[in-house]
Image 1 (cartoon, rainbow, N blue to C red):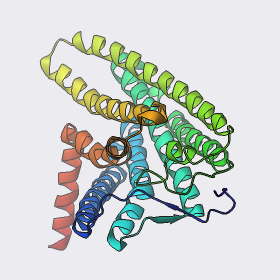
Image 2: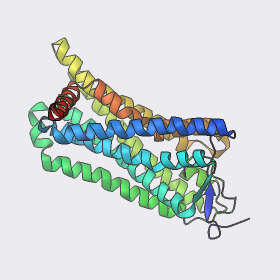
Image 3: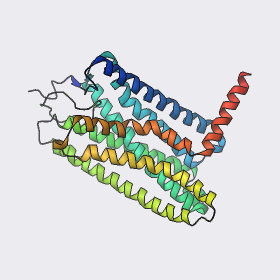
Image 4: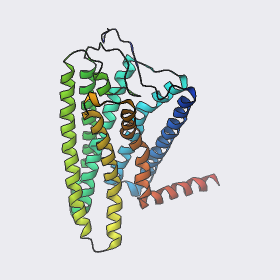
Length: 311
């Protein structure tokens, strides 16, 4: 038996027992991580450098790209290092920092996805009021609110989780420090307080999800009234990527945080964690750029400019 004051490190879940599979996981995660950094970094650079993309939609997309780079950097590098060096350990402070950063960036990202739904709603359903409702100051305030809400959410959950006495060992059944897995180590009924906070957070997130769904119901009704097929295609191309990411993000995170501990199983838990913590950061740039002609044109312009300067 031990308590939280005597725990100096946690043991994370290993992806595999054999050295060959550990190295395979390292190279797989390295590829995903580099792809996420390069693609999100490229989107950030394109938006920052092209003045034609200095609009609310691309401002929020820039913020999303920055959050994606930060969130995937919170979990994947440590998992890669552990696979490479054949270890499972993470220090107590590193674990607390990982929980804080993960909650911070993921909460901020979800809040930003909600703001982006509002941006699409105003752009398609109230185009004449777009400049008024989404001026530069309003955009900065909404982005700041998203980041601020993520910070407060992370501070609350991290402080509460790591104030609990832990006496069921130090083995975390996940490849990163995740709150539901740490709660399993608690030996006090005080963990119900954190469970209550998670339920409150989930209710707020569901409220955001309902807002997003209602926004898209109005958007799709407006899009279907557009007479030209090209206009409808352009409107749908702006909305479907966003809705895809929201559904992937919400569905997998809800399963992880709301399922009873008795239903816990290592492999499904691991898959779900990868789906909501790693996949969105990697596929966001692909989904958004594939269906966005403005980003494609800006990328071609940036490449042409770079090539011209070399010659």
